[in-house]
Image (cartoon, rainbow, N blue to C red; front, side):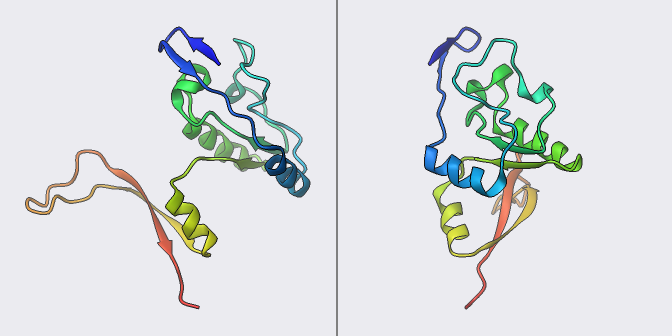
Length: 141
């Protein structure tokens, strides 16, 4: 851990368990890791400004305050989408709430509903902040 002078917060770094990395590596044959450890990385290292490989393994900082320049998982997802447009493959480990994994393990189909402005029950006024929403479909067996 290091002390981040900009936020005065403790930064945490987490390594991927070997069994997880090995299993994914065997399947995808990674040739680049935009978020390498040992950590912390050199001060000037920023993988969001670096050319990525053909097949990338990304274990991004799970919180913005742990990332270089305050960049968290969303920045790495956006970069992976850009890399996909260049014909590159990226495998990301992204934190989710446990109920999402329960749905995936049950075979749910997930669809993006975008950012939804829910309506207040009495006034029908839209919420001031839209929520990112996913549609989960569990088909009967």
